Image (cartoon, rainbow, N blue to C red; front, side):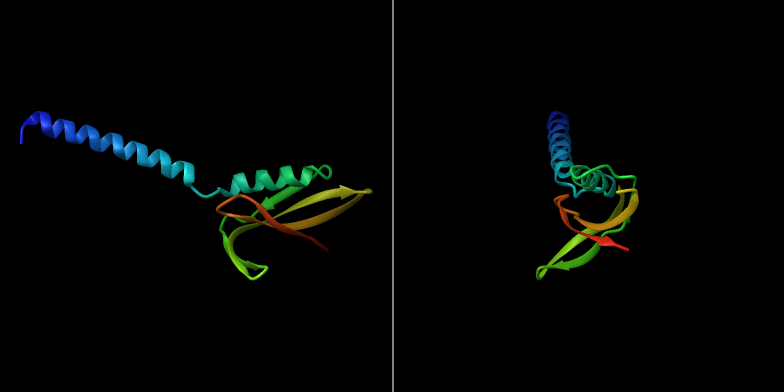
Length: 104
């Protein structure tokens, strides 16, 4: 094999590898930080929030007979001078809030 062919093949391989990495980065699942940001934006539509948290490790949950990998988190809102806490789940793949419940 000539040097030109080796260099050409290496160049093509590098370009294909770079393009594959870009596609993978675009498909990468939602990070916990992005999931929390999205959940906070969703809760802010109904009023201000005063605190938030999220577990960094996803867990498997069942909702309506379907299994999801989801982050679990929570927000605190002040309503009528009283703190109300809500817990939520965010889908790891899509970033969608799967549901929220008010806790004690």
